[in-house]
Image (cartoon, rainbow, N blue to C red; front, side, top):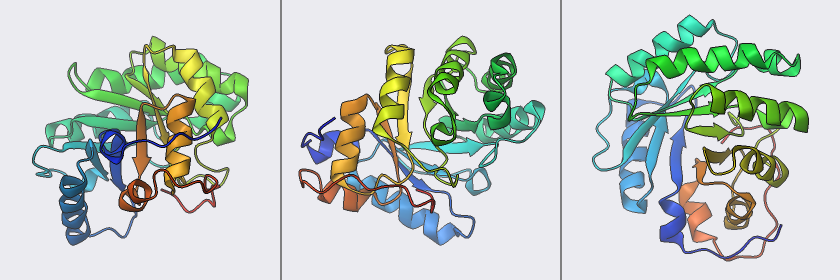
Length: 233
């Protein structure tokens, strides 16, 4: 697909401005929030230990079972419940990738449903499927499991998996599978305006970015979308 130039204000309103580095400090998060407010993004996404967080009019998102997803469902649910109690508006959970690789989509669905039960109506649950590590069939199975479990979004990547981050192919497949009933979040190695525009053209309705200012500044440029280098957001 060809990336289409987009208005920076429109794109900013689709962005979860993200800081999930393990070494992030309170000062780093405060700077993230200030930048988010200046850029007009949808939300900030931070690690759960950084909550509660006053972000003003900007929504607050966090992660759950991150980044491996290899946690008991009850632990993921407890983590999500704590984040909601600490003021999170949205929770991005990681599935058990091994269950998806094995084709055990009933287990994937049950895992998501456990977290959904801890994230009440009015709060958003996104499901990270680590699409770069999955086949097309597995991507479809995960998306169907997420929808059946009551998730609000499916999301490509943690940004930390060595297989890579978002791809136009995966985003398009996810969007086709959920058919507008769920949102689609593209994340992982989206570092240019061209890459962001390509993901939106493929069907992304939300973007996970760490270098948001640089992406917005480069919208409309014709450079090729960045390839994932495994270094995260």
